[in-house]
Length: 196
Image 1 (cartoon, one colour):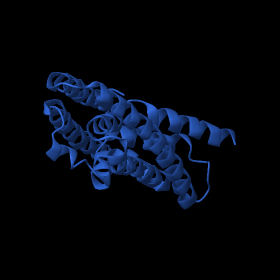
Image 2 (cartoon, one colour; image 1 turned 90 degrees about the vertical axis):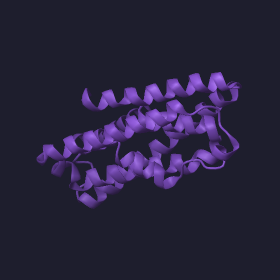
Image 3 (cartoon, rainbow, N blue to C red; image 1 turned 180 degrees about the vertical axis):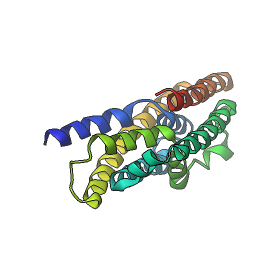
Image 4 (spheres, helix red, strand yellow; image 1 turned 120 degrees about the vertical axis):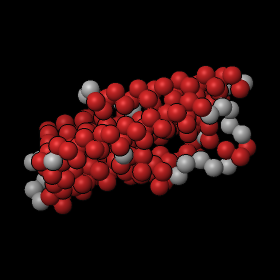
């Protein structure tokens, strides 16, 4: 039980700390509201759960044996996150056309799979807690369920915080400044990829 407790604490802290997914949840909550952002939040959480399950089933060992795959993942993920940060930073106040089209479940999955912080978090869990379940399938199920659950809770909180922020923003200038700050935070999350 002490091992499960440590894993629960690890998952709680790892999913709640700021990173690319939290910034996207905040930005979506601010622009579209909580209900319309839930498909994105669910996709982000599901992606983390799937990655944790994959890490628990043995993918972590494969990544450790192929350092070039980790480098490629970091390069692709960093590029994607920088592109997203540019898009967030350049967006102004929500227009009716934009409000009708929030990001969905698939976008959340894609963002998570390309997020090196999420890979580091899930692979770190697989390396730290390999003995919690004997068959790899049981370990994958345990990791997937725990990380998906905590990610859903944490990202929902960040989305609600984003919605509160969105209520304070009234003018085009306020939205421009807030989006620039969110874009900068998202770009800064790339630093965590290269200097953990």
